[in-house]
Amino acid sequence: MSEPIWHNRRALLRGLLFGAGATALGACATMPSTPLAEAETAEYRLGPGDQLRITVFNEAELTGQYLVGSQGMIAYPLVGEVHAAGLTIPEFTTSLQQALSQFIRQPNVSVEVANYRPFFILGEVQRPGTYPYSASLTVLNAVATAGGFTYRANQSRVYIRHANETEERVVQLSIATPVLPGDTIRIGERLF
Image (cartoon, rainbow, N blue to C red; front, side, top):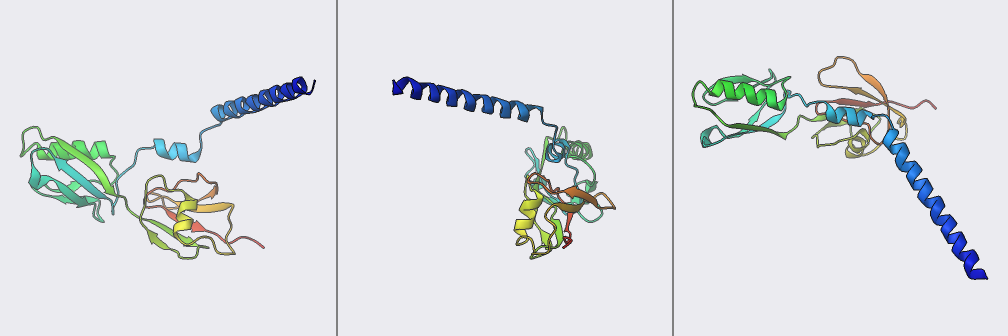
């Protein structure tokens, strides 16, 4: 007689767990996009400090790594200065192919970012400064890189200024708050 009761309890528990899991999955599917999802869909624009790996098929002397200078240009063999700042990778690749087509018949060019420009973090962190950017970086990762929060840090909001902006924005801090190359992050002081 105790076996059917135990079996029924187990079936009831299994049904409850399955229902809760299905509800959680349904909620995830209907959640609005987060700032991280929006940041990942936006195309990355090149800027000063980015290091590019350029490969030209069958042209070893034109293949190598090139730095985007402070004026937004790269010095490239054969064609001279090539504008890069503000362009996406496909736009820059097309521009370089057009410049090279004056010297090479149908150049096959491949461009990728070898090293992104650094990000800057200041305010209530242990070691404010400039740090190298890595893919999918979040504010919490950046804070960890800078030694963590100080005891005075406001851990609920952060101030972010993107490289191409003149004013910083207040952003609610979450585990998914993204950092882009060239961003300046400021951790404010909390009110006591």
